[in-house]
Image (tube, rainbow, N blue to C red; front, side):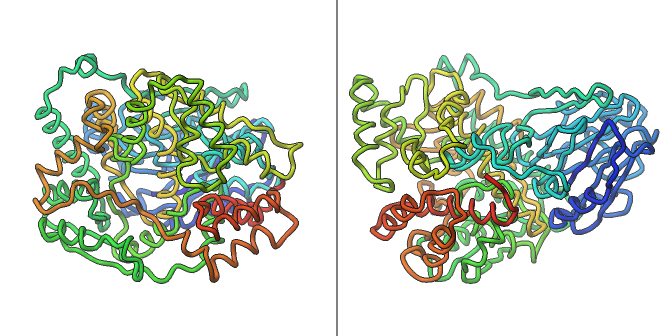
Length: 623
């Protein structure tokens, strides 16, 4: 895993120092090596920080030029089918100097042009400059595991793995984008191509960008889509045993491919269904498998070590139980600095601690991310289906009235308030926003500077809802294309990379993604009374009989309890109320803090405001 950045300009870059400064602001992404390349005319500069995983020798150094010296690449990620691609390219006459997957990507571009991305199975973000065609080609993997920010301005394009690298440029604007802020406060992240800063974009998952140096024009396109549901599945003509066999074979192959590395590899074993299945497949592929579980002393409800031990004993892995140190509030400024586009997810704290501990033992780990979105694992799926079954027949007008009454009469943080507000959504075409941070009325009260803000998040979200008649398909596709890449994968990437640890996700092999959305009927994902149906059937086939298939333990911390007293409560109060330099209405914030003290569920909302303020002050962002 690595950090990449670059600039392609129509005029020579006068001050080149910021490129190295930006590159080294991402040193955590690649502590093993660093490189810089400039074109002869000084218009194109590429930079790279390297975490050595495949080919640890200097031949894997980046930026990397092809044999002609005309094509240069900076690459972040892993290509899991690079050995097959290498053989194919060798048969077409390509010779290789290294054993790295980066050189394979370079040769593939040389052979097939921009269409080569369809050949890749992996997680990636890269920039390729073609000196002959005078163009920059950027692309990002299908699920969005690896990040890529870019800015087009002043007859140039600059790009980087992390926003902090772009902010190294002396003329970089540091103003909050009001629409992005509205999205952040509504659903906890900034979706799609938007970015929290004005003038910056994210390249969305499964998208590519071509920037023409001569014209200064750019083109962004989507190179891959989730498949439509297979006609046989829609007609309920499926063979359950065949589906299980296919899923088992796909997962086994994905895990086997992702175990390939020239450094130690392990498995993050929580003891849940997803990580346990990854472990089951890993022991098939490798004679020696190391598994890691984290224990948080004093928090019994969050302790999964017994479940992980069961799986480790059953499969005979070399199991390591790591104990996290006490979580102090001092960690929040560190995370705010790292999450240079903030997200609202306090589980970034245990994810960071896990990454820090595991990095002491290995450089690469496999995890279970993606299983919930692909196979119906989240708790809101069965509840939505229950709502559809028992409340969907109520007149829309009645449900809208109930939703409005809940928003007006129930205080923010009241348990069930979001679900009642969700009654207003037409379940034949929409998806209720159950995990809303702040509804529109609350945002109107919260934003102190109304002249720079207007509510747009609901309309933006509605435009991103997939068009399908099946509610569960709609909800899982919505989560796959929004919550997964903008929250889960951001959280994993930023926390693991801060510790120079590479995390791989076998469930996000694009073949498993296409299988899940194209071949698996909704009733084998979730029903009004069950979740993750097909995966649990596979677990019954592969895991020990004593395994608890119904357990669902989210990776979280007792933030609500911490905010009742002590240093966490004090820090939150000081951050939000200790300065007049704040975006948020003090009276409204105080109401949230008071509500939390009374037992309401405002901890994640308060986390959203604290992280934003810490981030804004760290990077001196104006409003």
